[in-house]
Length: 442
View 1 (cartoon, rainbow, N blue to C red):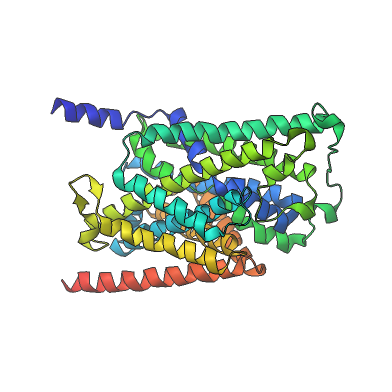
View 2: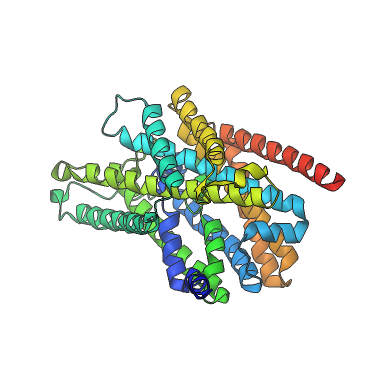
């Protein structure tokens, strides 16, 4: 009993600043390292405004989730709150929305890893890299490496160090300390330079700005482990302020260092910005860091959807067979097989659509995240004490989410992802109706 109580205390020992650091490290992934290039190519330099607005929208969602956590800590976090607010159908829908969003995020990261790997091996098909990374990640999750948490912390430090490295080297190149002043800042000074694709281009890029902040749901779950749950909003403010500052500064440097025509969805804007005859090794070093960062985030997503699958099965929102474990320790092979099917879909898309798969999957993943965030805001309207300020923040967040969702309809690269997300939502809604129907009868 003493050992059990001691382990329970250790599980709930996070301070608010630790949660902020974990949030920053866990959120920074391929959505930032590669997705920002897609956002810039669509929206131009004005995409910095989209990242600011997305930070504001993300904060509103996290603030609502954190205040619900402070009022009533729940291990199921947003899924439990949706169930309390609207009933069992909402818990089912929220849980499966999260599961599919993480699956798509994992597919997006898998594709990004393949793109980064082709930086060194351009002749190797993307699907071979995708299949290799998928097998390694599934093996890590199945065998449950006890030291994985420590490894994740090390990889998180590498991600943050990579961004700091980019900021320092980019500043040195622009100042002429490296390269003899060959870099001249290309600061946009006209409306056409800021909005090369007009307002529609910026609107279409909005979804990728939101996608770069994806991961606050995990923070909501981790808020349950805070020593003082009421400090969760403070952790969110510091985390998002830090993320927004890093994103705006680094993307701003990339924009003034690289011609707009050079940005593309197949190369990280930061690798493009660091290309120099005087620093031939830097793009290779940074590309290696991107692969490490992407694999870290992808494997974390794999852990998340495995845990969510077990939770859904234990609470009757998925077949009970998925809750079984081998030797009471390892996830049942059947549960991982279902996840592997989704990963195989990403590999097949990489094989059939090597030129567009990242844009399609990333758009769909970003949309699934926002659908779940809308669930969080709507749940807060039912569970939190009403006030004018909270109402204004909630509706502002919903408007920003609606703007990002609708913007995907106006660009040929993001439109297919919108239809993919609608198909998945329709599938979840149909399954939800069937489950609730039989649950009511029994």
